Amino acid sequence: MSRDIVEPEEARIYGIGYRSWKRSFQPNSKRFLFLTWEEIKLIARPRWPLYVFISLRLIFFIFEVLGILNAPPSGIPFEQYIPFKQFYFSRLINSGSPMLGLTDVLLVFYAGSSVLSRDRLSGAYSLYFSRPLTRLEYLAVKFSAVAFYVLSFTWLPAIYIYLALGSAYDFKPVDYLKWEYLQYLVAVLGYGLLIILLLTSFVLLLSSYLKKGWYVGVILVALPIVSSIVYSILVPLEVQNPSIYVGPFASSIYILAWFLDIDKTVLVENFGLFDATLITSVSYVGSMSASIILALIAVFLGVLFVRIRSLEVV
Amino acid sequence: MAKSPLIVFEHVTKWYSGNVIGLNQCSATIGKGITGLLGPNGAGKSTFLKLATGQIYPNIGQVSIFGVNPFANTGIFTKVGYCPEQDAFWSWMTGKEFLVNLSLVHGFSKKEAKDEAKRVLEIVGLDDARADRRIVTYSKGMRQRVKVAQAMIGDPELLILDEPFAGADPITRAYLGKVFEKLKKKGVSILISSHVLHEVEAFASQIKLIYRGRLLAEGPVKRIRQLIYDHPHRIFIKTKSPRKLAQHLIIEPSVSSVEISNGGKNSSLWVLSKNPYEFYRTLPKILIDTGIPVEEFQSVDDNLQAVFDYLISR
Ligand SMILES: Nc1ncnc2c1ncn2[C@@H]1O[C@H](COP(=O)(O)OP(=O)(O)OP(=O)(O)O)[C@@H](O)[C@H]1O
Ligand SMILES: [Mg+2]
Image (tube, rainbow over all chains, first blue to last red; front, side, top):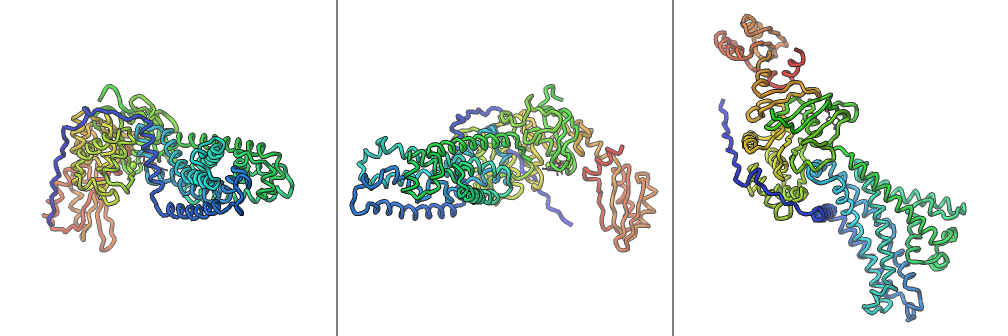
């Protein structure tokens, strides 16, 4: 019997070596931006859901913009036809963005559901948590990556519609920047931010508990269904302000209306939102719901942080 | 032993879910130099190392590394490098990209991260051709090298390596062994786990034996080697004529007992030798003199498990 004898290579260590290495680290903020960007690239890595989502949105918006541009009936100037903010509101509702529409829920789910579980399954927790990087920083990176990714899909359409509306109203370039109109864009972006922060913190919290990404999806799809069922029970009972009881899913429209300062009668008469007869006032329901959402965000983020801080890499 | 210990465990107990005990009232001190953490499967080596690097926290007792509690205290990782037992990679990256990214997580700027990756790649002996391939295509040995390399990012004073030789080819083993020896000369301390003594005895100065979650023995490598090689060995011999061979063996002074397990064709002998060194010397002589053919021969006590069973039964 013969056996190959393997001669081990000689280890070489060059003069670049140990002890003399000078460390100069970059500022934490720079590292934060870099890591967030890396994470966003990871989220967007399986390309096809991204393309499907973008093309759905694009098709939608082509119709949307065509609709806006063709809307003025029989040559009546826009200013006489419908106030700008109302038109903006109606278009946002129509396009489902940045409303808490199913598309956004799906996008947040797609972006956020595996952000933490991916690291858990691939063992990458140990790669992060054996570096001079705090767990709060880790969480901040994950959170910002998902929020930023989803926000880009929510904000861009809102800006896009704003621009299209402006052209329908025959804005001069300077009009776009007039606070008179710009305030509505700011309101809509703020609304989008509120909703996305809520969804992101919720999804990250779920994904820190649940083993499989699609469990998160099931919960996300079930929640609006359950709340709309509860809502449809409350409405015939003529409960005052029913949407407050079923949480963000039914009340977000009032937040947007509140932000854009659209009152109850307009909602009922111009938008056929007959449930609005049950509310005390748009500002009441809107502010209540916004506060509830802010409180939920704080709770979700708090729990998430405690969880990550005490997380064990087993 | 060093005066200032690097790692101190005080009565540390760790349970996993399902009441599995990982470490049981374990007290230990790890000093400078190279320490081998030895134990059979499930002894608690990985638990020990995860506790030392703050990947998990103890249920009872205290762990400190460089004088601080490592759990969630990620600042220590400017001085400590950790190589986990499990594969933890972003395997879609090349080896080089992986190390550059981890250097960035570590806090290096883009340019310095590249230099740092290059430096650690050179130390573990991965040339450019291999470092530029995707990690998914890597052999086990190359993976182990990359894993060790990532622990060396940031030039730590202490390397904590969980079975870096596991599954690696002989060349990688020899190479990494040489690397560790050279690091030791440069003043780097290493805590390395293994379940076979010969993997670490060449370069470790101290050995800790752990078994069933407890520290069973510790001391300089020479003493531990004696413990392991000087205890009775059980030897398995497969032969066509077990009775005849047994008659010859039982009269040998190095043999304590012979047991025949008779299964027709699969006849075999279990020999217990209280002086294995002597026995291994005389056995070939007996076989030649008597002309008894032996089909199989192995010492089951080569594995640590048996040694530990022996040690705790004393
Ligand atoms: N995540 C876990 N959940 C439950 N039990 C665990 C877990 N990790 C380890 N254990 C148990 O804890 C004990 C010690 O395990 P540990 O992994 O520390 O041993 P080890 O010495 O590293 O073994 P090996 O040589 O197999 O790596 C074993 O009984 C093991 O089954
Ligand atoms: Mg282990």
